[in-house]
Figure 1 (cartoon, rainbow, N blue to C red):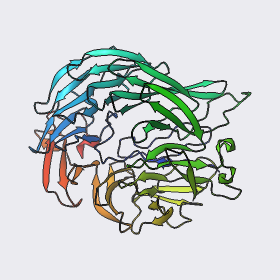
Figure 2: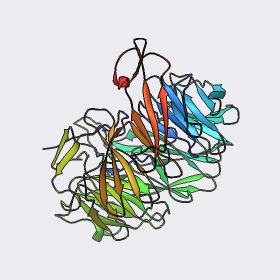
Figure 3: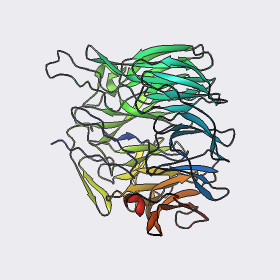
Figure 4: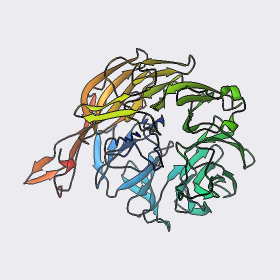
Length: 508
């Protein structure tokens, strides 16, 4: 029996299920780490927040309103427009924003909560910009469209030009020297995938291109940017049943060399799948291997090919320079993994997963959250939630209640604060993980979201009942700044200006 289960988190769609003839894993590298304020340029869904790098500002998304929070002045102000995506400047009090409803792109002056400039590019997509990333030097904002990217000058919003990405951009990754990598969408030709990767110099608008024999996925530069890794979680063509051929190299880790002279070269495919995570020091890249979906010809050393009876899933730790790798069996159902902030190990979360085939899994959602019983689970049944030491190549389960990495932040002191999705859809329950002590603790709070300021203080986004005045109801919420996850060292309250039209989840 094939068991398929997908967990949505915090009304944010932070866990996704993609189509496939069998199933696709939510297992693999976990993109839910909010330690840096959230992914730049991501779409802000209801309940999400993003924090500025200096920790002074926060943008909080609600149903139809965007709230700007000043943590220094302890104010929360409703903006006169809805922000859909934000890229924070590290140079001053400005954020470059994509406005909702195709209303353009602008530079938000944070002190005055007003736009310094706004442009309305002629987007071909019906929803407007699909991506937004600043270059590392902040000279330009690169914005995605249906079959191209726009390059906008951050100084005044001038549209410097567009660069074609015919298959449609799916990821933008800035590099040093005013360059960006742009990943296109998957194209199928003779039942084999190709994904165009573009290296763009934003000043000259010159580019280099290479087709990678793989499906589209987030691209991960190695330290220094001379090499990049691209690997999907699942890559299979939606083809008719009578197709004469099939894709025989499923889900590899594609290696691309990035030249200082504006060149790209596809190096090879490694026999794993992604997404890929790279340690902060750049010494290791972590991917995964599925013995039921691997191409034996990709192994330079046949002795590394897992034999009969080996666990289905393996952790694959790659040296980005030499491309040598090690494999460690993790069981027959793939958990989620998150790189620990130190880079020394991985947080392992088997409490919410999606089997990629025939593995046996039973997952239950109840008032207490998510629980799971997994046949052949990671660590040989020693617990669904724990830590894998990359140096020692050893796993140990956490003691305490089973938390879940649905939305989390990591502090420098080894403390992780994570939200486990509530079954009633009302956000997440807060847990603390002490990585050093290998222990977890239920903090007894339910939140909309959690964030982290540069000094290690938490931002707890607390749901409040609507205020009632003159028979009308007004949305409210609280932003609690906390060191311990329990008490507030500072508290900022937001109250909406416009009466709520109906009593939905904003009323409590």
